[in-house]
Image 1 (cartoon, rainbow, N blue to C red):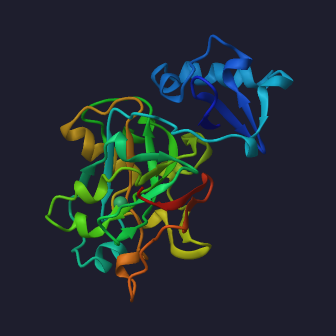
Image 2 (image 1 turned 180 degrees about the vertical axis):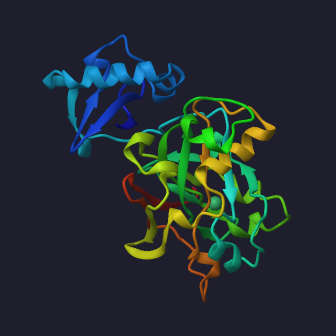
Length: 288
Ligand code: MG
């Protein structure tokens, strides 16, 4: 199934995407979880109940996808972990060695924006860069998860644009500032359940575009650390929980590695696409 949260008067609502329609889960059965996070936390039985409920969706539960504003699929993830340098060509273009252990950093929810919301180009930098990333949503939590069992812990996959303020990322060898500017983390709009994609979401074309021009074009099969390996590595040192989000790194073609650098600027539109998941599209606006 393809889940999305969308904006409505009052609270955001949980929907299931069905072609050009979105089925409002609560209209089908008000006893079902009201958010994607609550659904994931409720376990696989709840997802099966949603599948049954939408099979019998009343007409008023079906809304036009084009008429809805996406919300963040998970508004405040318990953990938002990012893997850096997970494609060999991208590590090389940034002057980094191929890592033997993943570069890990974190995002805070204050940096996240939904699909369609503005990416904020800060006043203090001109080095605004894009990064298309396949992103894991954890279903079943755990610690010391074996690589062989890791894919059983995935609820689904979504899209992330790890928009980076490069000069701030490179002010020290800790990337926290350049990866956490407000309004620099587009996430969503949909979460596709793992059963609808190849194991580990491997072998999928991943691209980014700025104003329609392709900037990154690669395949998730080229990830140095696979989905399963990333989960095993992370759970070796911390407990993963339902609804945790893990961005798996970006391929080559980012703005800072181009000659001359092709930074994003206000007025641009940036898109991330992964085959089988969809498109994440956001405008870029100046900080006010
Ligand atoms: Mg990244």
